[in-house]
Image (cartoon, rainbow, N blue to C red):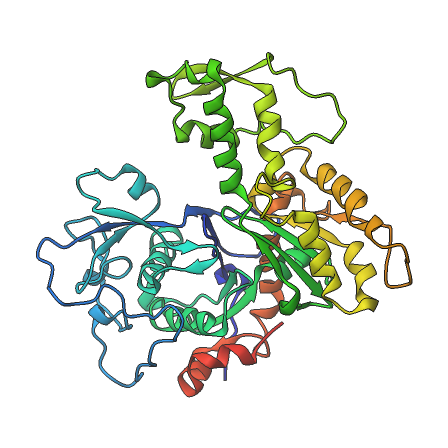
Length: 451
C-alpha cells in the first residue's frame, strides 16, 4: 500500500536557469515560495584532490545506470543510506556531507553562502542550468540536496515529503529520468511528480488552454497548451529575454556620455545595469506615445552613491523584447503566431483568447499593453479571412483575484499552479510515482503518471 502524505509535508521545487524557487507546506496556497535562490554553484576543490576521478557521473542526455537498491550504499556515490546524526554535521569547509559534499569530487556552495564566500576559497562559479537545460547533473544533485536540507530543513535520511518538480518545457525524457533518479536516490523522496512549467502557469491563471509566453533570464518560450496538454511540436523559442535587456541597457548607458562620466574610468559597470533593470524604472511605451526627452534624467542609488540616467534610455532598453535590434532574430509576435498556427484550427480561437504572460522578465511596466498592441497590429491583420477557428478577440489572463497573497506576483503563476496541483495530485496514487514503483521499473516510470 502506498502511504498517503499530508499537505504540510508537500514540497514544490521550480527549477529555473536564473532562479530556483521552493516551498514546503501547501496547506495555504496564498503563501509565496519561501525559498528563492540563484541557480549557480561555487566550486571549492579538495585540498588533496584524487587524480583521474571525474567530477560528474550523470550524463547530460543519457540517464545514469539504475543502482541496485539491495546493495550496501556508500555516501561517496550519492546513494542513500540510513546514516547516523554525525553524518550531517558540518565539515571543515562549512558544508554538510549529506547535502553538498562529494568526497570524490569538488565541494559546492550555494545561495547566500556563495555570495559571502571568500574569493580565495571559491575556485570558480558555474551556472547550474543554461537555456533551460542542466549543465551538470552532479551539481544539480548537490543543489537540490542543499535546498532540501539547508533551505527547507528536511533531513534526507528521514525524508517523508512528497515532491512536485516544476521543470522547463523543453526537457527531453532522458532529463526527466535523471531528475527522477536524483529525487529518489539522492534526496530520498518517497513520492514525486514532474510537470512542465507552461502547463502549471495555465493552471495558476485558472485555465487549461492558452498560449503561455514565458520570459525568463536567457530564453523566451512560447508554448501552446490545449485542454491540459502541452503541444510540444508547436513550441517556439528565442534567446531575446531578460539577459538581452540587460545587455541592451548596458550598451545604451555606455553610449550616454553623461551617465558614463559619473563612473571611474568613464565605464558603466555591468552590475549597475543589472541593478537598474531590476529596480522597476524601465518602462515599456506604446508606439506613438510621447517619447521621453533625452535630456530628462532619473536619479538612481547604487553602491551607496546617487547617479542619474536618461529616461529615454530606460524606455528604450526593454523594447528589445518585442523589437529585437538584430534583423536575424525572430520577433516575439511572429513566434506567438507560429505557435498558434501549429495547433489544430478549431483550437486557435481559444488560444488567442487565453494568453498567459509569465516569467521574471515580464515585470516591466507596460509590457502587457505593448505586446497586445503589437499582436493586434501585426499578427491578426495578416489574415484576411476569419473563420470560426480565428478571432480578433485577444485576452490576456492573470492570477485570479481571490489569491490575495499573490498580488503583484503574476510572473510566478507556474509556482501557484504547482501548489494547486500538489494539493490534489500528491495525495492521489494515480498521479504520483512512488519509491516502490521506481524500484520496480526504474526512472522511465516517470512517464507513465501525469495529472
